Length: 409
Image 1: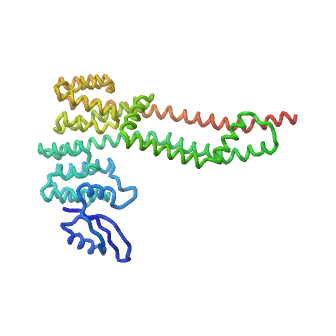
Image 2: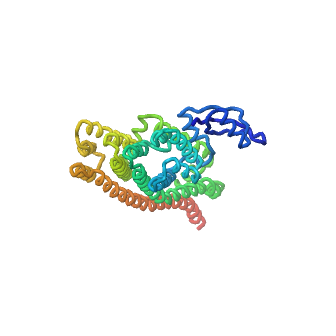
Image 3: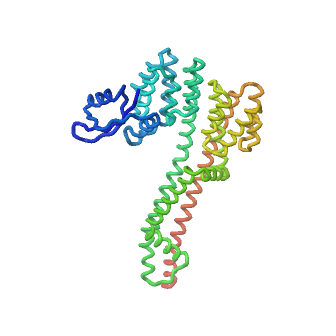
C-alpha cells in the first residue's frame, strides 16, 4: 500500500506534518479528513523515502529509534503466535494492536499490508533495513524457505535477547565509573574556577612572594575562569572533527579501529566482544539454514571493527576457494587460538554450529569478567587521580599560609 507524506491543518488552524498509508491520494485525503485534519500538501513516498519517513518523521523525542529490546520482544511474540498455529497476517495484526512504539507500530502495519497483498515476510522486512538488519532478514528468508519460520524466529529471539543481556551488563557495569568521572570533573572545575580564586586573591593583595606551585595554581585558575568558553568550544570542535573523521572517512575509521585494537586492556576486550558476536551470529545463521558464505558476509558487518571485518571477508574468499574456515582465521592473528581450535573441531565433526555456540558462551562470560576487572581498576585510579589533584590544590593554598606563620614568628 502506498505511503504519503502530508502537511495539514487541524481544526484550530495549526500546521501539522506526518505520514499516512492509503490506497490512493483520494483515500489518503479522506483518512485525514476523518481525523479532523485538512491536507494542504500530499506527496507519495518512494521506498527509500518511506523508510526514512517511518524512521524519522513520526512522533519526535526519544522514541524514534527502535532498539534491540523492542525487536527481541517483537520476535518472541511473533514466534509464539506462529508456533501456536495462528496465520501470519492475523499474527501481525495482533502485534500491531499491542505495540506501543510509534515507529515500530507503523512499520508492522506497513509489513502487514504488504504481506496481505501477496509479498513474503522477507520481502516486506527487507524494506526496513534500519529496523531489521541483514542477518535478521536472511534468517527469516531461510525459515520461510524451509517452512520453519516459527522455529527460526524463536532462535532469532534467543539471539537478540542474549545480545541485549550482554549490552545491558556492560553498560550497567560502566555506568558507575562514568558517573564518577563526570561528577568529579564538574566538582574540580568548580573548585578551580570559583573557589580557588577567592582564596588566592587574599595572597595577591598582601603582595607576598608566593611558592611556585601556588603561582602555577593561580595561573591555571585564572586561565580556566577567563577562557573556559574557548576551552568548551575547542573541545566541542575537536569532538565534531573526530566524529567526522571516524564516521565519514574510510582512513579515519580504519585508523581509529586500529588504535582501539592496540590500546592495552581495551583492545583485548574489543577482540573478545568481536569473537563472541562472530560466533553467536554465525552459529545462529548456520543453524537456521543460511549458507556459510552468505553467513560470513553478513557476520562481517556486525563485529563493529573494520580490521576484523576485513579478516572475515578474506576468510570467506578462502572458504569459497575450498579451504576450511579455521585455516584463514588462524592466519589473521585476531582470533584466539582456542577459538580457532574449537572451530576446526566443529568442522571435522560436522557440529560447527554447536562449537560456535560454545565459543560464544565462553567469550561472553569472559567479556563480563573483563569488564568487571576493568571497572574495578578504573574506580581506584579515578579516586587516586582526583585525590592527587585535590591534594595539590590544598597544598598550594596552605603553603603560603604556613610561610606567613613563619614570618610572624
